[in-house]
Image (cartoon, rainbow, N blue to C red):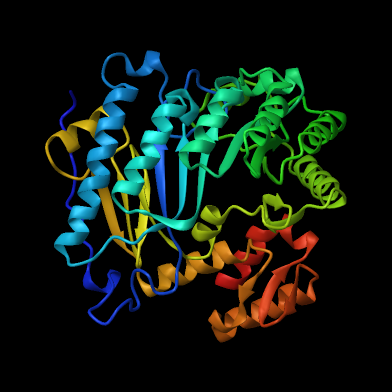
Length: 407
């Protein structure tokens, strides 16, 4: 087993509730969630650079069983650390099991994963509980067991309904399976189901994306995430692009495809609430809103990131190293940083500008406010209710708006 190389997790007093209750740190009116990273995948998609591992890559160094035991130890160590500082762990308002492919664990083990959250941090009465799933590793019984076990939301990767697009992405699911899986989730009692799309894949045509959008809407989901293809360094797709086997995604094509996605989903009654996310009323992902709106969360699992009261830390990445650290009785923290006021401000601008609710103008300096006014004058945003809200054109140029404000 790998030797664990970790650093101590030190939470300064400023990050924790004070004797008189929550102060500027943890719990100061911000949501609290728990993220759980499941690092296993059956195969590796060519575009993916997430912290995931296939059985062939792991060999005998790690397994779902060793991960589950280490995860349980991490969660109990987390609340023990807080108790040692005189802090009662807050109940999680949201839980998100991501990956990787959490559905490879099976429904029973996923319910056990949620039970660990109940036994440590606890769950708020109206907690949103999401798991990501690959449609191919789900079934009606899978969804029924998750619903009975306390999950409230399902998120599945569809990416496209076109076989040649899925092949370019190295996706292994059958094109029609995500729609069938979404219907099975609804039949099991889930009210909230998301399907992910990726647009701009080499070889994708307008009619391919249109057919994918038709399929998503035919499934009846209340949430859609749609992302432009990004060729990440170190991936199989990046190597193909470098060798000339695949073309680079074209920015103009990506912009046109984004407009197609937005128009089609709006016409179907879905509204954008974050640049890459659309939902019917009440279908918004509360966990992700917590990230974008400056919330706190504890991340468990290999490579998971956490944030509490302006302190950020991240776990060691490899599952074997992660398990080894916890076997030694220490939290598997690879690094930590305390965000200074400037860092928090930059992140606040970067994230809230992407929300339909917009960026509060009161948080901007004089020069930043002038830049915000210029963005509005250029038609990239509107000033409403004391906030800067991106226009349709502004969403395509969100990074430029942020750059102008922060510069």
